Length: 368
Ligand SMILES: *Cc1c(COP(=O)(O)O)cnc(C)c1O
Image 1: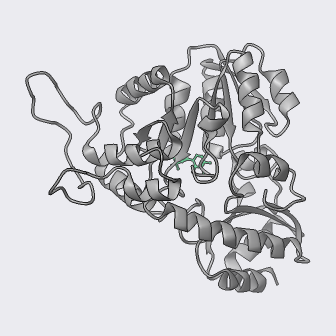
Image 2: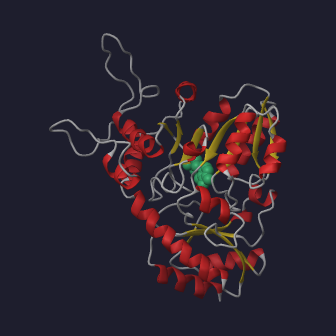
Image 3: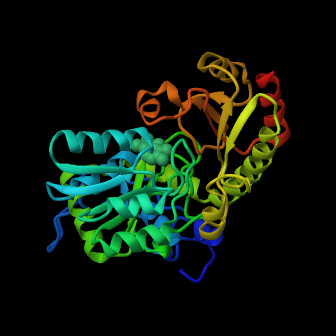
């Protein structure tokens, strides 16, 4: 399977192969399994075929072993909960608000020592690393759109004796495979692009280390953060079209970013695909695309930025991202995002797969 290209893996992997089998792995709804002479299966430990099918496709895409979780944040928690008390964790100054909260709480409880660094600045990360046990990154930060240099930071972390985890939710394995750049564990909120239809809450971790896989498997089993059968079925179904969805969403985003950058009401567009973007060089060198998330800063107040969201008709004013439908929100409305300096007027646009001219017409009428 690993010789196939990702577009084919998304279609081919994780299906029953034996003669007479259904083409798709059925939704298996069970907690217990009947005893057999040697094993004692239970779905919190030994996932069903439905969950395994999702793990197989994602594992093949990342060329590692995948573990599915009941949400993206459950996957982050699983990594954090395996760290011994007192571990030094180096984390981004600004990142997904739920992850900020997890590290803040671990610090407050005295579980971890947390050091925050601008992960787009390799020297700043390097200065924070001595004594660290974990470096946590995002492939593209939410919502400030900074792009860390994965190979450089992973090498620095390993020299310091730290393992490296990265939240690749904004990128998907089609845009970057962090394990190829030396990262130890990749995390996805499969709620977003991997499922792709905004109808599922699901997370995943992928690693190439058998020892790390084992530790994470044990922790997931203890915490009970296994996903449901329906969710993983929907996610696997979503993965089948991931390549096409990403292709269209990225093409739309690239075009909209260019047009928005030239709009008089827009003061800054944060999108690594724009040559002037601070993340452009790193993304062009280490990623295969620029993703479909755009940060739009407006000339105006928070209220005026909220009003733009309200005037949009095709683009939906809602949190979340990565679905077929375009979503937008002013991120500083969230206390955590405001706390790490997200500009008041910054709108995070998740570009979907609609017709680009319809999206542009909608933005034009709303930006006035
Ligand atoms: C949504 C999101 C998460 C959390 O995932 P859930 O599936 O909602 O728990 C983590 N990281 C990023 C970048 C996200 O966008």
